[in-house]
Image (cartoon, rainbow, N blue to C red; front, side, top):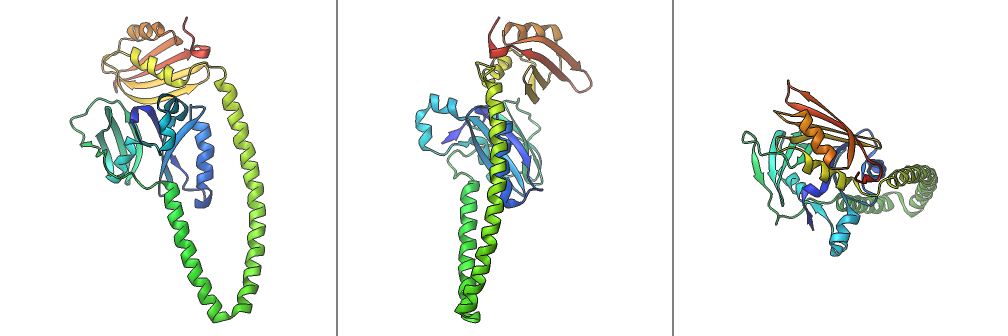
Length: 293
Protein backbone atom coordinates (compact mmCIF):
# COMPACT_ATOMS: atom_id res chain seq x y z
CA UNK A 1 0.00 0.00 0.00
CA UNK A 2 1.43 3.39 -1.03
CA UNK A 3 1.52 6.24 1.49
CA UNK A 4 1.68 9.87 0.39
CA UNK A 5 5.02 11.56 1.17
CA UNK A 6 3.23 14.35 3.07
CA UNK A 7 2.33 11.87 5.85
CA UNK A 8 5.90 10.77 6.58
CA UNK A 9 9.24 12.15 7.79
CA UNK A 10 12.56 11.38 6.08
CA UNK A 11 15.94 10.76 7.72
CA UNK A 12 19.32 9.79 6.27
CA UNK A 13 21.26 7.89 8.94
CA UNK A 14 24.93 6.87 8.78
CA UNK A 15 25.62 3.38 10.20
CA UNK A 16 28.80 2.79 8.17
CA UNK A 17 30.93 2.51 11.34
CA UNK A 18 28.64 -0.15 12.83
CA UNK A 19 29.11 -3.84 11.87
CA UNK A 20 26.56 -4.94 9.28
CA UNK A 21 25.11 -7.60 11.60
CA UNK A 22 24.30 -4.98 14.25
CA UNK A 23 22.83 -2.30 11.95
CA UNK A 24 19.17 -3.46 12.14
CA UNK A 25 19.33 -3.33 15.94
CA UNK A 26 20.97 0.13 15.83
CA UNK A 27 18.25 1.30 13.42
CA UNK A 28 15.51 0.23 15.85
CA UNK A 29 17.19 2.17 18.65
CA UNK A 30 17.47 5.33 16.50
CA UNK A 31 13.85 4.92 15.40
CA UNK A 32 12.65 5.13 19.01
CA UNK A 33 14.76 8.26 19.56
CA UNK A 34 13.92 10.08 16.31
CA UNK A 35 10.24 9.28 15.82
CA UNK A 36 7.77 11.88 17.15
CA UNK A 37 5.03 9.21 17.09
CA UNK A 38 4.15 6.85 19.95
CA UNK A 39 3.49 4.02 17.47
CA UNK A 40 5.72 4.66 14.45
CA UNK A 41 5.69 2.79 11.17
CA UNK A 42 8.83 2.89 9.05
CA UNK A 43 10.49 1.84 5.80
CA UNK A 44 14.30 1.64 5.50
CA UNK A 45 16.44 1.23 2.38
CA UNK A 46 20.14 0.50 2.93
CA UNK A 47 22.89 1.98 0.74
CA UNK A 48 26.58 1.48 1.63
CA UNK A 49 25.95 1.52 5.37
CA UNK A 50 23.47 4.43 5.20
CA UNK A 51 19.79 3.98 6.02
CA UNK A 52 17.34 5.98 3.92
CA UNK A 53 14.49 6.03 6.43
CA UNK A 54 10.83 7.10 6.18
CA UNK A 55 8.76 7.27 9.41
CA UNK A 56 4.99 7.79 9.80
CA UNK A 57 2.27 7.65 12.49
CA UNK A 58 1.10 4.03 12.24
CA UNK A 59 -1.59 4.49 14.90
CA UNK A 60 -3.16 7.42 13.03
CA UNK A 61 -2.98 5.49 9.74
CA UNK A 62 -4.77 2.45 11.20
CA UNK A 63 -7.40 4.69 12.81
CA UNK A 64 -8.24 6.23 9.44
CA UNK A 65 -7.68 3.08 7.36
CA UNK A 66 -7.93 -0.12 9.48
CA UNK A 67 -7.37 -2.39 6.46
CA UNK A 68 -3.82 -1.01 6.21
CA UNK A 69 -2.86 -3.55 8.90
CA UNK A 70 -3.09 -6.29 6.24
CA UNK A 71 -0.58 -4.71 3.85
CA UNK A 72 3.04 -3.56 3.77
CA UNK A 73 3.11 0.23 3.74
CA UNK A 74 5.52 2.03 1.38
CA UNK A 75 5.91 5.84 1.10
CA UNK A 76 5.50 6.83 -2.55
CA UNK A 77 8.79 8.74 -2.25
CA UNK A 78 10.67 5.43 -1.88
CA UNK A 79 9.71 4.52 -5.46
CA UNK A 80 12.18 7.18 -6.63
CA UNK A 81 15.02 4.92 -5.37
CA UNK A 82 14.57 2.79 -8.50
CA UNK A 83 15.71 5.81 -10.57
CA UNK A 84 18.55 7.29 -8.44
CA UNK A 85 20.40 10.51 -9.17
CA UNK A 86 24.20 10.42 -8.95
CA UNK A 87 24.57 14.00 -7.70
CA UNK A 88 22.34 17.07 -7.44
CA UNK A 89 18.72 18.05 -6.82
CA UNK A 90 15.38 17.32 -8.46
CA UNK A 91 11.61 17.62 -7.99
CA UNK A 92 9.47 14.46 -7.77
CA UNK A 93 5.70 14.34 -8.27
CA UNK A 94 4.00 11.66 -6.15
CA UNK A 95 0.47 10.79 -5.08
CA UNK A 96 -0.20 14.29 -3.73
CA UNK A 97 2.08 17.24 -4.35
CA UNK A 98 5.77 17.53 -5.07
CA UNK A 99 8.88 16.55 -3.17
CA UNK A 100 12.30 18.18 -3.34
CA UNK A 101 15.21 15.73 -3.25
CA UNK A 102 18.98 16.07 -2.89
CA UNK A 103 21.27 13.21 -3.93
CA UNK A 104 24.95 12.51 -3.30
CA UNK A 105 26.95 9.54 -4.60
CA UNK A 106 23.74 7.84 -5.74
CA UNK A 107 22.20 8.14 -2.25
CA UNK A 108 19.15 10.20 -1.21
CA UNK A 109 20.45 12.47 1.57
CA UNK A 110 17.60 14.99 1.95
CA UNK A 111 13.87 14.99 1.12
CA UNK A 112 11.31 17.73 1.74
CA UNK A 113 7.68 17.55 0.79
CA UNK A 114 5.55 20.47 -0.31
CA UNK A 115 8.25 22.68 -1.82
CA UNK A 116 7.37 24.97 -4.72
CA UNK A 117 8.22 23.75 -8.19
CA UNK A 118 11.66 24.92 -9.30
CA UNK A 119 11.72 25.17 -13.13
CA UNK A 120 15.50 24.96 -13.19
CA UNK A 121 15.49 21.52 -11.51
CA UNK A 122 14.78 18.22 -13.27
CA UNK A 123 11.16 17.07 -12.86
CA UNK A 124 10.09 13.40 -12.68
CA UNK A 125 6.71 11.73 -12.17
CA UNK A 126 6.66 8.55 -10.09
CA UNK A 127 5.29 5.41 -11.74
CA UNK A 128 2.86 4.34 -9.03
CA UNK A 129 2.32 0.97 -10.74
CA UNK A 130 5.95 -0.16 -10.56
CA UNK A 131 7.24 -2.82 -8.18
CA UNK A 132 8.44 -1.49 -4.87
CA UNK A 133 12.17 -1.57 -3.98
CA UNK A 134 13.29 -4.74 -2.25
CA UNK A 135 12.70 -4.50 1.50
CA UNK A 136 15.75 -4.70 3.74
CA UNK A 137 14.31 -7.75 5.49
CA UNK A 138 13.74 -9.51 2.14
CA UNK A 139 17.27 -8.69 1.04
CA UNK A 140 18.67 -10.12 4.26
CA UNK A 141 16.58 -13.27 3.78
CA UNK A 142 17.93 -13.79 0.27
CA UNK A 143 21.48 -13.16 1.45
CA UNK A 144 20.95 -15.59 4.31
CA UNK A 145 19.64 -18.27 1.95
CA UNK A 146 22.62 -17.75 -0.38
CA UNK A 147 25.09 -18.00 2.48
CA UNK A 148 23.33 -21.13 3.78
CA UNK A 149 23.56 -22.76 0.34
CA UNK A 150 27.26 -21.98 -0.02
CA UNK A 151 27.88 -23.28 3.49
CA UNK A 152 26.10 -26.54 2.67
CA UNK A 153 28.28 -27.08 -0.42
CA UNK A 154 31.47 -26.34 1.51
CA UNK A 155 30.41 -28.70 4.29
CA UNK A 156 29.79 -31.52 1.80
CA UNK A 157 33.24 -31.00 0.24
CA UNK A 158 34.82 -31.02 3.67
CA UNK A 159 33.15 -34.34 4.56
CA UNK A 160 34.46 -35.94 1.36
CA UNK A 161 38.03 -34.66 1.71
CA UNK A 162 38.67 -34.86 5.43
CA UNK A 163 36.41 -37.72 6.46
CA UNK A 164 33.38 -37.94 8.69
CA UNK A 165 35.33 -38.19 11.95
CA UNK A 166 37.44 -35.07 11.40
CA UNK A 167 34.34 -33.19 10.25
CA UNK A 168 32.42 -34.09 13.40
CA UNK A 169 35.34 -32.96 15.57
CA UNK A 170 35.54 -29.60 13.85
CA UNK A 171 31.78 -29.14 14.08
CA UNK A 172 31.97 -29.75 17.82
CA UNK A 173 34.62 -27.03 18.13
CA UNK A 174 32.54 -24.66 16.01
CA UNK A 175 29.41 -25.27 18.05
CA UNK A 176 31.36 -24.56 21.25
CA UNK A 177 32.61 -21.25 19.82
CA UNK A 178 29.14 -20.31 18.55
CA UNK A 179 27.62 -21.07 21.93
CA UNK A 180 30.13 -18.76 23.60
CA UNK A 181 29.38 -16.00 21.05
CA UNK A 182 25.64 -16.45 21.55
CA UNK A 183 25.99 -16.15 25.31
CA UNK A 184 28.03 -12.96 24.92
CA UNK A 185 25.61 -11.64 22.31
CA UNK A 186 22.59 -12.34 24.50
CA UNK A 187 24.11 -10.26 27.28
CA UNK A 188 24.74 -7.36 24.87
CA UNK A 189 21.19 -7.65 23.53
CA UNK A 190 19.76 -7.63 27.05
CA UNK A 191 21.71 -4.47 27.87
CA UNK A 192 20.64 -2.83 24.61
CA UNK A 193 17.01 -3.80 25.26
CA UNK A 194 17.12 -2.22 28.71
CA UNK A 195 18.53 1.00 27.24
CA UNK A 196 15.87 1.04 24.52
CA UNK A 197 13.06 0.43 27.03
CA UNK A 198 14.40 3.22 29.24
CA UNK A 199 14.49 5.58 26.25
CA UNK A 200 10.96 4.54 25.30
CA UNK A 201 9.69 5.14 28.85
CA UNK A 202 11.24 8.62 28.82
CA UNK A 203 9.60 9.31 25.47
CA UNK A 204 6.19 8.09 26.63
CA UNK A 205 6.49 10.24 29.75
CA UNK A 206 7.29 13.23 27.56
CA UNK A 207 4.40 12.39 25.23
CA UNK A 208 2.00 12.31 28.19
CA UNK A 209 2.61 16.03 28.63
CA UNK A 210 0.91 16.69 25.29
CA UNK A 211 -2.67 15.70 24.53
CA UNK A 212 -2.22 16.18 20.79
CA UNK A 213 0.49 14.81 18.51
CA UNK A 214 3.13 16.86 16.74
CA UNK A 215 1.25 16.22 13.52
CA UNK A 216 -1.49 18.61 14.68
CA UNK A 217 1.10 21.24 15.68
CA UNK A 218 2.87 20.94 12.32
CA UNK A 219 -0.44 21.18 10.45
CA UNK A 220 -1.67 24.27 12.34
CA UNK A 221 1.65 26.08 12.05
CA UNK A 222 1.96 25.21 8.35
CA UNK A 223 -1.55 26.55 7.64
CA UNK A 224 -0.80 29.76 9.52
CA UNK A 225 2.36 30.65 7.58
CA UNK A 226 1.95 33.32 4.86
CA UNK A 227 1.89 32.33 1.20
CA UNK A 228 5.35 33.83 0.66
CA UNK A 229 6.90 31.22 2.97
CA UNK A 230 8.17 28.06 1.29
CA UNK A 231 10.80 25.31 1.36
CA UNK A 232 11.13 24.39 5.05
CA UNK A 233 14.88 23.90 5.54
CA UNK A 234 14.65 22.42 9.02
CA UNK A 235 12.06 21.59 11.67
CA UNK A 236 13.41 21.34 15.23
CA UNK A 237 10.99 20.40 18.00
CA UNK A 238 11.92 19.97 21.64
CA UNK A 239 9.77 20.17 24.78
CA UNK A 240 9.35 23.86 25.43
CA UNK A 241 10.78 24.99 22.08
CA UNK A 242 9.82 24.94 18.39
CA UNK A 243 12.24 26.23 15.76
CA UNK A 244 11.69 26.49 11.98
CA UNK A 245 14.04 27.54 9.19
CA UNK A 246 12.27 28.45 5.94
CA UNK A 247 12.61 30.48 2.76
CA UNK A 248 10.75 33.81 2.45
CA UNK A 249 12.09 36.52 0.09
CA UNK A 250 9.82 39.21 1.60
CA UNK A 251 9.07 38.38 5.25
CA UNK A 252 6.93 40.58 7.52
CA UNK A 253 7.89 39.72 11.15
CA UNK A 254 4.75 41.29 12.61
CA UNK A 255 2.56 39.27 10.24
CA UNK A 256 4.36 36.07 11.23
CA UNK A 257 3.87 36.80 14.95
CA UNK A 258 0.18 37.61 14.46
CA UNK A 259 -0.50 34.50 12.39
CA UNK A 260 1.27 32.08 14.72
CA UNK A 261 -0.29 33.59 17.86
CA UNK A 262 -3.74 33.15 16.29
CA UNK A 263 -3.20 29.38 16.07
CA UNK A 264 -3.42 29.14 19.87
CA UNK A 265 -0.74 26.43 19.69
CA UNK A 266 2.40 28.52 20.43
CA UNK A 267 3.50 31.57 22.38
CA UNK A 268 6.55 33.85 22.62
CA UNK A 269 7.00 33.91 18.84
CA UNK A 270 10.32 35.33 17.63
CA UNK A 271 11.08 36.07 13.96
CA UNK A 272 14.59 36.70 12.64
CA UNK A 273 14.90 37.46 8.87
CA UNK A 274 18.23 36.91 7.14
CA UNK A 275 18.23 39.23 4.07
CA UNK A 276 21.43 37.78 2.61
CA UNK A 277 19.88 34.42 1.74
CA UNK A 278 16.13 35.17 2.07
CA UNK A 279 15.89 32.78 5.03
CA UNK A 280 13.72 33.27 8.11
CA UNK A 281 14.26 31.74 11.55
CA UNK A 282 11.10 31.22 13.63
CA UNK A 283 11.21 30.29 17.29
CA UNK A 284 8.24 29.79 19.61
CA UNK A 285 7.15 28.02 22.77
CA UNK A 286 4.45 25.34 22.23
CA UNK A 287 1.63 25.31 24.76
CA UNK A 288 1.65 22.22 27.00
CA UNK A 289 -0.91 19.74 25.72
CA UNK A 290 -1.41 21.80 22.57
CA UNK A 291 -4.44 23.48 24.21
CA UNK A 292 -5.63 26.73 22.68
CA UNK A 293 -5.84 29.84 24.77
